[in-house]
Amino acid sequence: NAGVTQTPKFQVLKTGQSMTLQCAQDMNHNSMYWYRQDPGMGLRLIYYSASEGTTDKGEVPNGYNVSRLNKREFSLRLESAAPSQTSVYFCASSEALLGDSQPQHFGDGTRLSIL
Amino acid sequence: AQSVSQHNHHVILSEAASLELGCNYSYGGTVNLFWYVQYPGQHLQLLLKYFSGDPLVKGIKGFEAEFIKSKFSFNLRKPSVQWSDTAEYFCAVRGNYQLIWGAGTKLIIKP
Image (cartoon, rainbow over all chains, first blue to last red; front, side, top):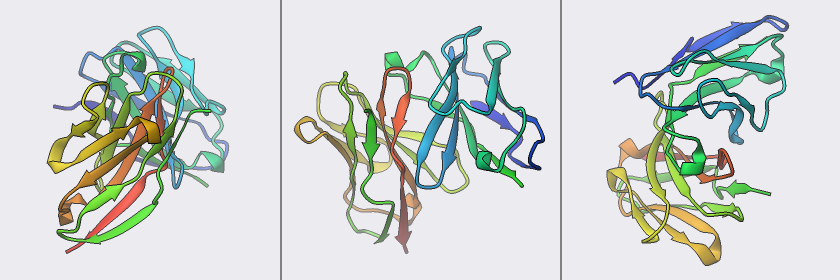
């Protein structure tokens, strides 16, 4: 019952460094999402992938890129990390894009600190 | 603009007290509403959802929520809380292609 698996769980970066957050789901879901969670602001959508081969910008895409590698995997890349990207990042998946009102399944999150 | 407002950022209750967490939304389309919970150290998980039909929705662990269309509200309730209900609770409404999230309410239950 792995569900949605994110790696790493914790990471500290220096300003300007790059890194990729990995996400994989084993529920055969079509849609996947990347969120960031900041205190007092709830979750904000960074990018989403409605289905394999497609990606679209969410609410806060600047400074990030994504890759939907296959149906299972959806990675998030920070090319040049900035302190404003210090946050907790969540990956989620759902059977279909939210137009079908599907609930989302979440990973455990990645705590990322940019110094 | 689409938005979700959770009135209380922090709530502290004693065990056996009754709980009501407020959620108001602003969205012009078909309304689908969710409450998610995040227990300490765990991932977000679905507590309950409203799509249509009976506006009183029952979820897991004794939680329920009532959709009041005239008030644009979807408040979460539990008659008697337990220490294990300590968590952060998020209300969300389905938007065009994403969930629109409230800022969350941290609930602390004193034993």
